Image (cartoon, rainbow, N blue to C red; front, side):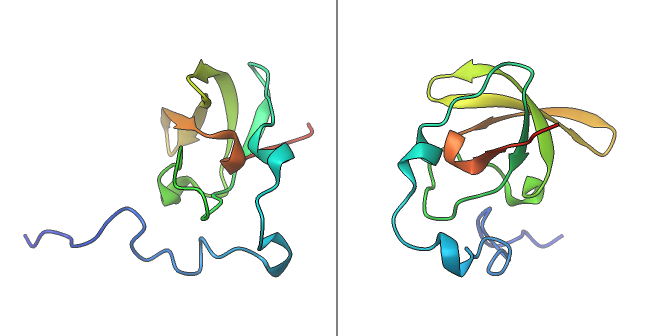
Amino acid sequence: MVTRIGTKRRKTRHKLKRARSEKGKLSLSRYFQTFEAGEQVGLKINSNVAKGQFFPRFHGHCGTVKGMKGRCYEVQIKDGGKEKRLYIHPIHLIKLHA
């Protein structure tokens, strides 16, 4: 087998592209937003911030906040039939209203 060349951002040119309205300075309210345990969140990568970024495969998925680890949130998602835990910076999370 041939080893795959590249990093985790490989083949994500269009997936991680930001909308025209989202370009420019970072929103500080989104950077410092807080979540409670058990809250539903959406996963959306902000390509300007590499800190606390998750693997692009999970971009667009929904998850549940389980707690905090440092400045990042522990988010549990379902990938296929498996439960997975990701540690994500709040700038890559969106609050979902249930």
